[in-house]
Structure formats: C-alpha cells, structure tokens
Image 1 (cartoon, rainbow, N blue to C red):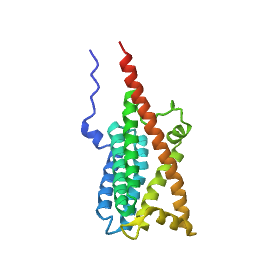
Image 2: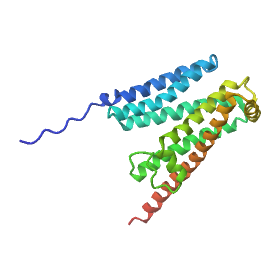
Image 3: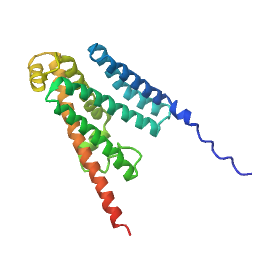
Image 4: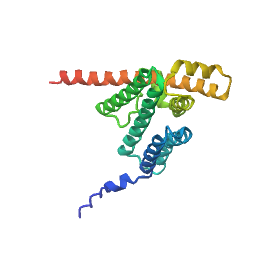
Amino acid sequence: MAPKPKQRPAKLSVYLYIPNIVGYMRVLLNCIAFAVCFSNKTLFSLLYFFSFCCDAVDGWCARKFNQVSTFGAVLDMVTDRVSTACLLVILSQIYRPSLVFLSLLALDIASHWLQMYSTFLSGKTSHKDVKDSTSWLFRLYYGNRMFMGYCCVSCEVLYIILFLIAKNQTENLMNVVVESLTQISSLSLLLALSIFGWSIKQIINVIQMKTAADVCVLYDIEKQHKP
C-alpha cells in the first residue's frame, strides 16, 4: 500500500502564524501613529517606536514556535521600509534641505531591494547570508545581532528625536543638530550615540547596494557566456 502523500498546510494557517499576526499589529500601530503624527507628537513617537520594537518580537516568535515563513520575512521587511520611508518624508517637509531625507529614503529602498533581488539570483534563502562578502563591516552587521540592533535602533531613534525637537516646518537641519549637541544633557548624549550608529548604517547601506549590484552584474555576465 502506497504511503499517503503529506497534506500541505492551508494557506490560511501561514497567514495566521503568530509572528505574522505580530506583523499585522505593527502595520496597524504605524497607521494609527502616522494618523496622529502632527496632532500628538508624543503618542506618535511611542506608537512608532513600539511598532519598531515588535520587529524583534516577531523574529523571536518565528524561531520559538517554528513558524518561519517567506511571507513573514517579506511582511517584516516591507513594514520596516514603508514605516521608515513615511517618517523620512515627514522630516523632509519639516527640515531644510529636504533633499537630505529624500536621499536617505532612496538609499534605504534601493539598497534593500537590490539585496533581496541579488539573494534570489544567488540561490540563497536569506538576504542576511553575506558570509562570502569581502567587506568585514557588512559581515559584522548581518552576523552580529547586537551590532545590527544598535545600528537599526540608532536610525529610528535619531529620526524620532529630530521629529520631536522640530519647532516649526522650516527648520535648518544643521542648526538644529548642532544646537542640540552643544547642550549638555541626556538628549545630546542620546543624539550623539544615535548619529554614530546612524552613520554606520548608511555606510552599510552603500556597501549593501554596491555588493548586490555586483551580484546582478556577474549574473548577467555568466548568463551571456553560457552556450
């Protein structure tokens, strides 16, 4: 008697994975946060940062309950990119020159999109698999959770601080940053630590974009030389 074929799990079951439910909550929190961002800055900051922290929660749940899924990974990355993009757009309307934040938005999306695409071309299962990279900083970023967490948290904290300390919609970015750093306070220390981690993250984004672009180009070259 032939063995019965394994029954495939229903699509609904993947949508209802615990980490994916956490992902939906993150989306909802961000929607509420941006709905009140100009009327209640404090509430926006709390909701936005809580949603960001839930990024670690859904990853822990995925590993804890053995519910790692491609859909969950994509949902996670899209939520991260869209939420950061929305905040950068808001900051571009508050600070001058606005091109600074729009450039950061373009770099963030381009580097991560290229990284995801190059991952599929390489046949890898995760965009975090960069063991073959020649950049030690790039390998350290994806290989060390603490270092990666510091860089990511620094970016979000920096953007939230800039949003909170803006007094009007025509602020000069450099003047606000310099003035805040020269004041001896816990805020200036937090701002300095955030700027340092943010700077490393932008360097990594550039490395990631260049590395991923190289993979795409090498794929094209190999395809052309195939008989």
